[in-house]
Length: 420
Image: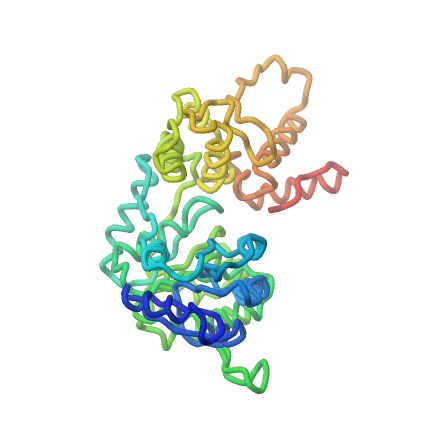
């Protein structure tokens, strides 16, 4: 456990450092947020504790800008309540009062050290094929490409693959779809000292940080062409890193269209796992909902009643598992500790989840096939919040066909939901 404490010398943070060391942590100290960032660019830390007397909001903002993903605890000695509240609002995950207590320090370390939930929930045959592939590939160190729609659980399977191999080894996940290309490249490849400023110590890239462990490249299909070329070259010298790449796009199609490098795909796709969308996993929405309800409520809620489970299983879930989890989280609040019922199931747009009504053929008489098709496409796209991939999957057509039809609609002056 790597812990970084940020605060002025001679404060109670030094005592907290000793307590953390006694609890088994590898502790580093930084007098200021600036010095803390220098350390974080050069070495991996699992947790940061920062004095509220420093610029907590500025530090957290810079962490987000440089794409450091790690929990930050604010702490202080008799700090005014507004300072603690401001730190939480800025993004700190909790506040720990000082002087430090061994129990609180140990609890903070245990929270971060706790293994993430990598339980694979599902009984649908399409999902069981994916989990069987995880079990088969775990002992090996071959690269793995995980394909699936957005929100279908690709990152969860990547973590499960790592845990099944050896959870003690380094694990690093990097998003490749950021609009700021230079940040993505710095996160991946690092930066030589002195590039940004004369006194800049540089930054170690994720490929080096993840040595002997697993490096997950999320949304690798969105990596810029220049970064793809650098990655091909860099991976020739990274045999000690297990690569797991995820993509919502079909990479062979992208290679054929000239939008992705074939040599990079060959390096990433030592094995391939396809994660089915939730609509193709009958019965799994109910299982996942009960799992999410138990986990979020920690056993205090009344579960999910049968009518609500039936509604959840009958919905198409354009946002997949991620959307289902959001709906369950919202339902836990609305149910106020009672069992989640149908009335508690509310989508992100404020609509209540309802059973899909049977379409009466009589209502379609008098309309052309073209009109019915257009209405079906537009309504499905609206339900999918503009996600072309999800909507085309539900309709059983290719994404290219979907885009061509939408182009025709737009040219005819028909409003189309914006792409997500």
